[in-house]
Image (cartoon, rainbow, N blue to C red; front, side):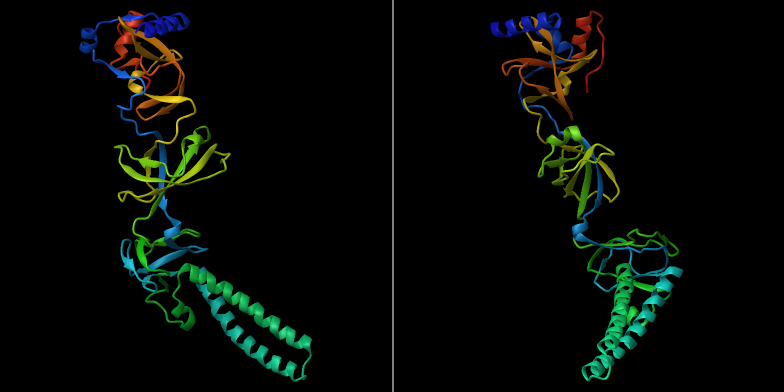
Length: 362
């Protein structure tokens, strides 16, 4: 106790705060409690961040168009299970009609060019035509093959039925769109007449049910606090996932790094922004104290250290703010000390002699 009194007396000399005289009965009446320095007996979920819920591209397949289209019929809706090749909807647009005409025209020209190439190859091998004449035939065929593959890939990415592409077997109203994989339709057209914007996925099939990611922007100065594998908590303290990857590059526009979390909880929706908490690591040479033990007086963060006769206001250096706690530099508070918590605003009032003051730092 003498050591604590000596330390407290030294702090009073250095920082200019007088000891607050208060007995245990007054503490009890005013709702002031004690907590041991270094204790874990307080609830802290970590540092708060915002996470945007998104699909996990590794476990889903998307279908999109490079131009605007319109939905003209619907066969499957969001939430339904589909097998690869199942009809989802019919779509239509002038650009799609032009692309399909180009595809079928190229296909027919390729058939003719392939036959000509085979004939010219036989004639060249028989010595009837020159190598140059055969090469022209070969190059024409390959040029058409490249164009055919290009138009086929565009239609296939869009999800147009291959049987329709190969045989012209039309859907009920327009171009039939089929599932490119088996799974749950997590995104699908909702109504007839819906416009599908260019380069926007309008069909997404989740290979695993509710496999979501959380994209979290971490301020550069907090990058050291988050590591791969760190647990994500929600506002109630429930475990909802973990950090899967962390970018090694800083986004100069936002001065943040991107952390991607695997979301294991099932109640979230894509596009939703949720508040999450990451415990992570404290800055070097730091310790945690509850935020209910800290007051901000002017520009100082102050805790109230228990003395024989009451409390001594003591300045601390805050290194990090967390949920329900502060990280402070070690050294000022010793493990054998006790600090006030609870209604410590009363102590500030007693310090100023006015009986009132600023609110808690949190």
